[in-house]
Image (cartoon, rainbow, N blue to C red; front, side):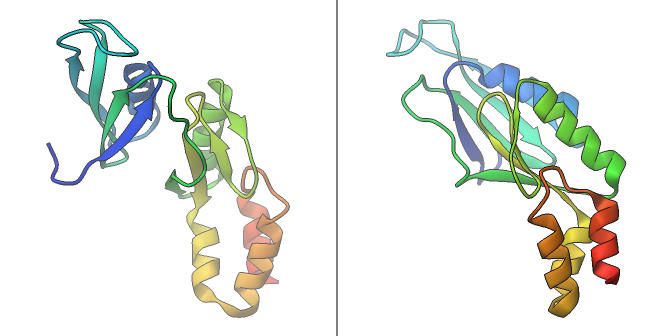
Length: 157
């Protein structure tokens, strides 16, 4: 187990979420699955309690803690993409599997986890600063899923 691990609270679907992430993102895997040693407020002995998994190289634990806490945009995974094909693949996997679209490259999976599907060209434009960053930023503000060609056109002016 890693020294620092992100713990994500799920109602009851931590294992399904971990398996979806492992199938969707490279450098992702499902590790140990821990079952409850006895009954607890939102589950029974033998239910999946925790799942160790990795998302794009980031170690995580999914905790089936019940319906008390909900996810929000204060936490998100940001996935850097190389081109429109990769952007589309991740966006469509998340949204097409019961998720929902949002603005500026953000979407949510069906468990309520927020994702930023961010083409590297957008981050490069922001790092360049000045007029290039302003044009790319303004172009992004009108998007749901990021359109790489429009960002690159905005970068050029």
